[in-house]
Image (cartoon, rainbow, N blue to C red; front, side, top):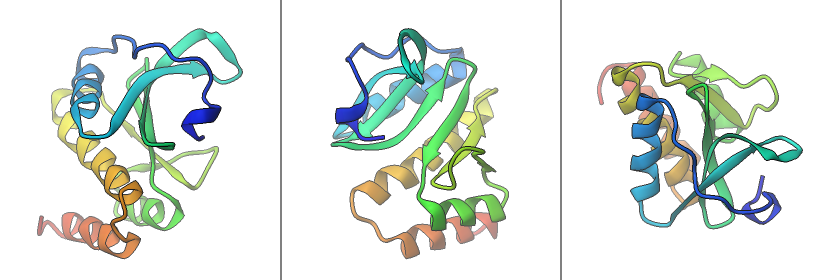
Length: 139
């Protein structure tokens, strides 16, 4: 969803400890706009934190510590195939990753970093190469 379609602005909420670490890191990245993620169709219920670069969403974190990362279909398929993320049941353009423990923070930031680079113009082919390198233990 585009930022302009997102509804009213509110600062991102406090999340569970490990998801909060991811949220704070993402909010510090150049050009990233962090805000509340509302329950779909209801701007009175906070559901997590959204992250945008310009009009493009790079993903969001839910209050229950699940990250939904905007990857596009080809990159998402590579991540799922490498077992580095799970499929998102509502769209092939997102992947899912649970941020449940401290070790998950680095992986979540890496996944969001792929989305960040994608919207800033890095080719999908380059991003898929990064995924393949990590899957092979080379990066």
